[in-house]
Amino acid sequence: MPTQDFKFEIVKNFGTLSESTKGWKKELNIVSWNGGKPKYDIRDWSPEHDKMGKGITLNDEEIQLLKDFLKNID
Image 1 (cartoon, rainbow, N blue to C red):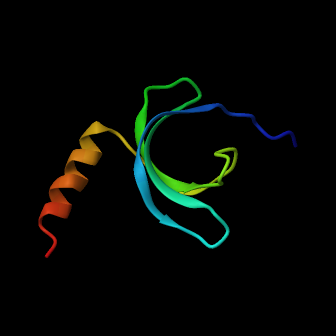
Image 2: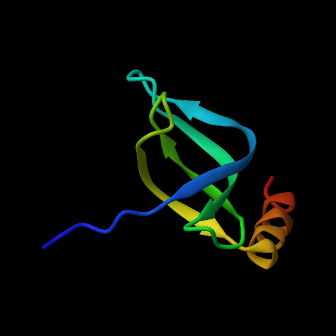
């Protein structure tokens, strides 16, 4: 079974949340997947940004809700 190729573009990098001993970084970015509308994205990236781990992608409404939730954490 052939694998599907997909394209991505990191539109904006907000910063690194953590870094592994192997150099992979968990980052908050805005990413456009396959030419789609850019979304907020949290995931691990290899040092060259050519490989990525599993992550979570959030639209504008979801990121605003997350921001509101985080304000309420002590």
